[in-house]
Amino acid sequence: MIDTPAPSNNINLKRKTDSSPPDTSVAVFKKPRDELEVLNKKEIKVADGPPRNGNILASSGFDRQIYLWNVYGECENFAVISGHTGAILDLNFSGDGSYLYTSSTDKTVGVFDSTTGQRIKRLKGHTGFVNTCHPARRGPPLIVSGSDDCTIKTWDQRKRGCVHSFNNTFQVTGVTYNDTADQIITGGIDNDLKIWDIRKNNIIYTLSGHTDTITGLSLSPDGSYALTNSMDNSLRIWDIRPFVTGERCVKIFSGHKHNFEKNLLRCTWSPDGAMIAAGSSDRFVHIWDTTSRRILFKLPGHLGSVNEIDFHKLEPIVLSASSDKNIYLGELDL
Image (tube, rainbow, N blue to C red; front, side):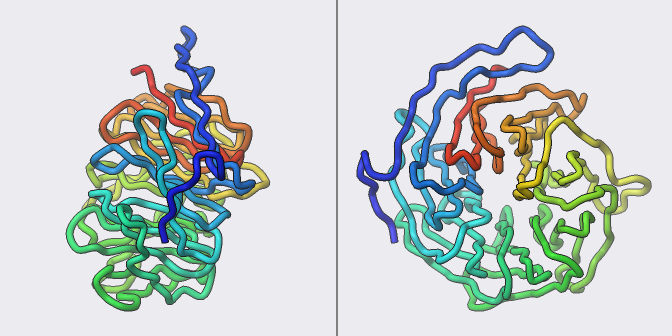
């Protein structure tokens, strides 16, 4: 179901002015460009930046609703989509922006038409909270999901039911396909990154190094590397190309924080792969240079844990969503 919200009902937008960063080695913005405030007393757990067309973004959280926003102009909230009966823990657009994929504490994965708001599919099969889901980048409309029931499941949007199911030893908190969608990459509370062969239904290899739960997982734009965010207060870049010899953990980044809230703080790549960004419990948005490992930006403004972050596909704009019930759009001075 899709609703057009009344201007003074649930959504309020506060416009923020731009602020140039100080002349330091780490740029710190005093204020975000735009603040999108959801006044429903619920944490914002997830958000996804604009798809290829760059015009809209989506957010969701504990209130079980999906909010759609215009990126440009006054950044209005123009639609609210319903369909889940539990908190939404992950949300992603399809590559062309036509669909939204969600995972929820109601133990389902949702597929929504981002234009009409209609729920296309309600994918059932998990027996625990579904912490994460992600679509394939190209090809058939495939989705992978990971759950507290210690399974990873794949789905085909055109079919009923689960296509594949993989048993993990521990709860799964991050999933994605590789670039060709013949492998699945997962992370969980066992601290390890695992690469699964879909056709053979087994683990190809396991990558160890983190010392606490992996909370976020993201594939690089060229599909060669996986980025992980962990409760051990580090991010790692892993080389997942075939036939690599030697150490696959190629870089480690630090500077952000996790805390007792134990939120699943996500991470992401910039569209050109030159930067990475991560959520942090210290209320800052952290952005690193992937080559030098230096923190390029440390963006304040939030009053709670930053749970989600994403880059605009076409412009130097970064999106952040927080437990303070706010979404920020910040323009990077590159």
